[in-house]
Amino acid sequence: MLIDTHAHLVDRQFAKDLGAVLDRAQENGVAVIINVGYDLKSSFDAVILAQKYDFIYTAVGIHPHDATRVPEDYLNKLKELCRHTRVVAIGEIGLDYYRNLSPRPIQQRVFREQLALARELNLPVIIHDREAHQEVIEILSKDKPSQAGGVIHCFSGDREMALACMNMGFYLSFAGPITFSKVNQVHEVVVQVPLEKILIETDAPYLAPQGRRGKRNEPAYVRFVGEKIALLKNIPFTKVAAVTTANAKNLFKISS
Image 1 (spheres, rainbow, N blue to C red):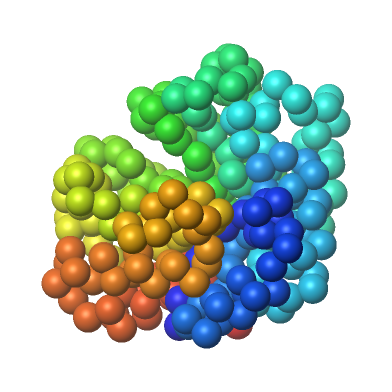
Image 2 (image 1 turned 90 degrees about the horizontal axis):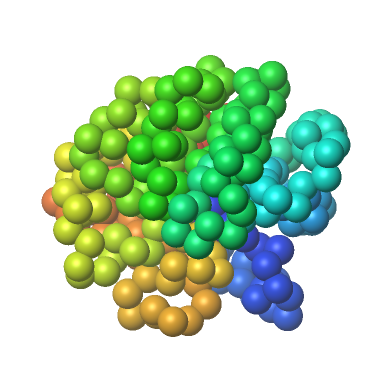
């Protein structure tokens, strides 16, 4: 049993064959998918999709790319979506200093506002961090997440950042890039951190693993992430599957 803790199933790349994509996921042992929103529309659509499939749960939130486009009442709209039982987290939220599609001060404000919403609702958070390691840590240290904790999605930091995140109660999630050969820093983090603090994900349709780079990613490929972690840690894949599944269930309060 595997859990893909981060996918974007409402992306237009899945518009024509989502049913087949979900079938392949289940055929490859994926029992649960966390479908993650990135703006109000995708969050709304993610909730609708989760209501159709009992193995799909959802997170709702505003990605830093979309921080400049939120309406004044966006927090109320997110809060309303969180009333649905299939919503298990606020995300994906955070900072992106690589593309800078929203001004950094606005990214930071929207990030902090959503952390406050997560505290109010006692929901875990899914954090996006790209080229913004120091600022993400600073904000999480000051504007602490709820007691429900959270996960650093597609972790790309070093051992020091990993320790700081784990000390704040966060899980570290790894995606297709750990299957690449020239990511030594991330490989070292995987080896050093306890399996009990690791989640696996695809970020589908993005970040396809080695052998499928440049092609559409999908939840079935989360197996390759788990297999790479098993190889790096020199442990059975079955153990990686069992522990990361238990971790995901614990974070997102999933009983199925």
